Length: 141
Image (cartoon, rainbow, N blue to C red; front, side):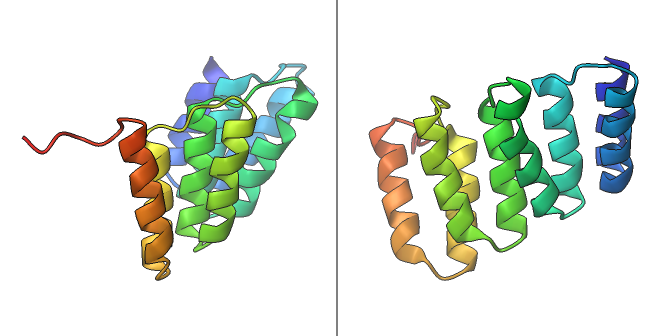
């Protein structure tokens, strides 16, 4: 727990390099990283605007015999959105479905925002329609 807590604190301080170094320290101390620890490190990378590190940690989960959860996907999608990598964010959402991670409203809103910032309004409408189909839209009342 202490590694995850410390990495989360580093994330709030936008210290992604230190978070990655602490993850390496944890592994050096024979701490088996779990999804929570990797998600915290991904969040630090996302907050530090390093989408490459966040995506690398997500891609590394299967090698570690870990299954990403919706927080993993949302963090990676946010990192990609912040890096103006909207096409990769779309692929990530598609891959999440294939890996049995159910995208939630945050997943869709993050991806839609990335597409909108890059003028891909047709994709925004397609994602919105999928959100509606999945009953993920907030009510108008």
